[in-house]
Length: 201
Ligand SMILES: Nc1ncnc2c1ncn2[C@@H]1O[C@H](COP(=O)(O)OP(=O)(O)OP(=O)(O)O)[C@@H](O)[C@H]1O
Ligand SMILES: [Mg+2]
Image 1: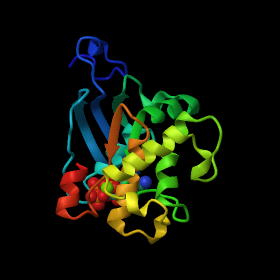
Image 2 (image 1 turned 180 degrees about the horizontal axis):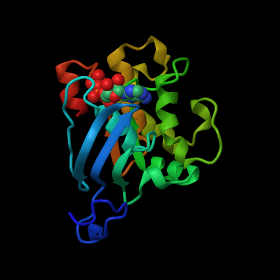
Image 3 (image 1 turned 45 degrees about the vertical axis):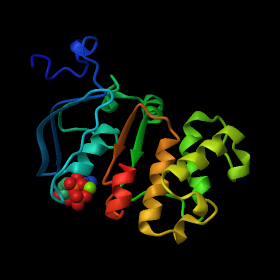
Image 4 (image 1 turned 60 degrees about the vertical axis):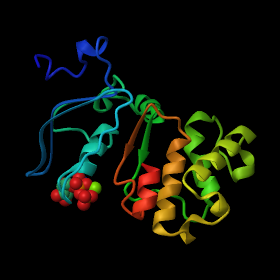
């Protein structure tokens, strides 16, 4: 396409894309990891990225959430290029994009419920300490999201005592709290058994 090198793609109005990646390349030092990637994801689409270990899947997701700057090409996430964002613009963009990390990123000493509630922090003004300090509607939604991933009973259990698959489900419930427009998930069902994988997906 003619606008390949342009970070803002002018055909967005006719064909809105949640994610629009063009000619993306990424390397670390001399090592080239991604070469000339094109990918478009439209609202409502469910896309799975499949590849062997070390292929660059996590790197691609980190480029999309603005943790890395590409060495070439352009990324548009909900119409914004994360590599061109200021810190506050990046924070605003990340509030609209849910991210389930490959390493979960839970706070081990906090309960499952508190970890899920932290998914709503982007929509709150003040820091919160303890589940009781969150507004009741959010606590109810957090519990619903824990129920959705089959963990209502474990809501008060410390996350560092949950099994790997349970921790992964807490991380997914936390992301659901964000009501994100786009959800990126890095191997979101890697630690789950086949039945749990199907229901979580
Ligand atoms: N910060 C970094 N510095 C140097 N090399 C890196 C860095 N991050 C990733 N790499 C390299 O980039 C390549 C792709 O890594 P990445 O984590 O994206 O793979 P992956 O497809 O997610 O693999 P897996 O399925 O094992 O999670 C690997 O060779 C890795 O060693
Ligand atoms: Mg990975």
